[in-house]
Length: 74
Image: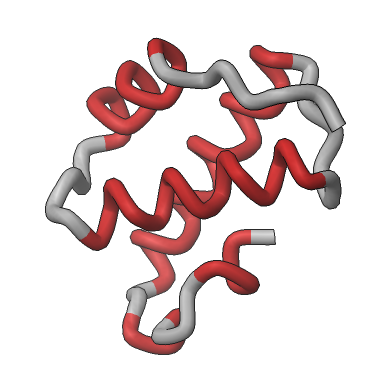
């Protein structure tokens, strides 16, 4: 799911990609979001945006996305 939102996914190192996947999985699990849906796509996009804007800390990403996850239902 995350690779769909990262045009330069090859530029991410394996550790970054693994961390982003873990954050994505935790946010989806916490919010009851089914993967491969529009809501999950929104989460992935927001996660990648935050990462590309310099937020690289897993805890910060989790906090920001947990606080701001009010995606509309599909």
